[in-house]
Length: 520
Image (cartoon, rainbow, N blue to C red; front, top):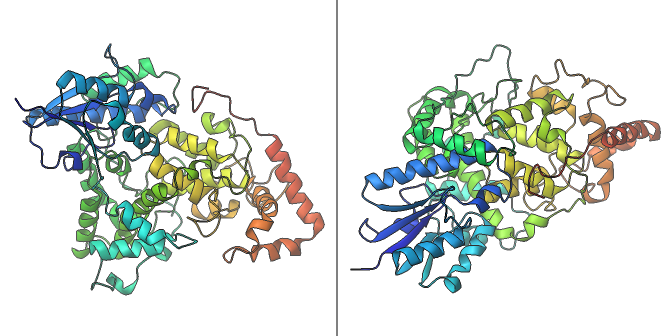
């Protein structure tokens, strides 16, 4: 009898077109799937994130079994569970007397380093396959990045458009003669906006069993466990995608930056969790969006904005992550060392914008990209919060967060901790931006119209405190350097008011207790 190939499939690799399965049939292989303690707790992931991954894994295993595959599934509660990927792969090699381990590369540096050690630890050859679910290979990104001081996403995005042919009028000319329609996608919310509801999926028996498991085993992890409504199968994820294309894509573009208190999803797709664990094919979604434009059911600015988020930003941050690791994890160009405030975990703050963004994060393990960047992230930037603590928070709290997508967004886009390799400027803003793009300032205890003093919106003095503290690094930045002329015209007394107001607010922040993000 021929010895089988062992194919470990990780929790974010739930795709039938996985490279490690290519060329294999059910008679050739044993598929290994593992719920391990190390992965559930290396940071203390949001309860719903753990439910999502474990439930999706269990459903995927059942689908594979129905197709005739032999699936060796190691549940978290199995008595002999070693708690690590390496330990479980080693046990499976012995259990099944395999001739080879074939695995698709990990999306995370930490796990990939462990995989690279398997060849020396296991009794058989190890074949680590490239993850072909991405459009750009690692070599593609290196070719783009080598020799560039600033790795501007826009130029990379244009190459991805050409490579895929998406929204291309010719081989070199984009549809509508513009590559990027972001200028058309910055509408503030309108009174009476009524976005259609996002599909929610009632937990079945498998998911209910996982919810019970997570409630018992991870009671001190951040976030609400229920209600849980994320898609956990490809069929559910496809229904969510169909609903987005039919009912929300048409208005996604203009309102993608808008924020409304208590209205968490607006016109966003809510598909990132399903894409990042492998239930949906990102290129297939882009083709569907393009078809919506060609059929006249969605405008170009909405379709281009959606496609740019996937083949532009998503592909870009993955390439950037592997190009800059492991150094990116420790980047802190601006020397920010203030502890993350406790209210990031509790939501107990009088700042209405932050309170609402943390509420939806706690309840749903989700906040949309402008909430993450221009409210939560903006605060961390201008308050000088330590990048490592901010990165841990984002990795913990969001169901779609994996190190490869979260770390470049935090270290590069949000905190400018990489010194500007990813972003051409720090995305720092005062309360005016939040007031323009949201209704958060209405009813807030603080007044966005006040610039200094105890009743002023804290974003206002913090903005100028940040700009002054980092003047030597930012004054020559061509995108924001002219702001210092405004600062200089204020005069010493007004400058002192801003700096003193900011310092009083910063001194009032209680640091987060230990144990929220990691088991310290």
